[in-house]
Image (tube, rainbow, N blue to C red):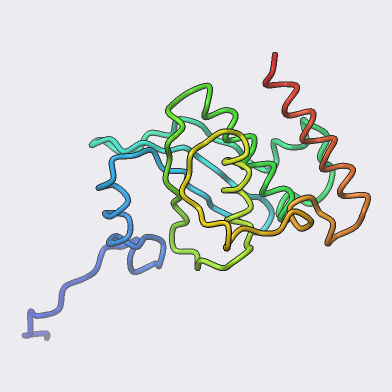
Length: 169
């Protein structure tokens, strides 16, 4: 029988390593809309989320699987797909809400040139205002898929034009 009561059980999402509450609280104190980025094994998910007392409200969402509508037929989890997903989310967000957002990468580690920052660069190029240093962004060749093959660069350009054309109407 346990007689010591000094131990307190941590929140469930903290125990499961799903939420860093200290980091989340600092993001919420800014009272700005967050660009939440969640990479999975197959896809990359980007959402513009606003805090409400009842729970977070998702304003806009874009998934790298949505790129197939615009002609993207390659892997949906690579760096060019992340850039295009960010661009798509940025264009949707400009129509819906304010353009000032902060980046929320969750519990992912911040790595220079990663898919997370490729998505952020896509959102910035779409017209969102995000504070991202140019030092941590991937280079242009990597964003366009030049590190994969030259055919990917062509598909990238075609998909980017299809996204721009669909939002210009």
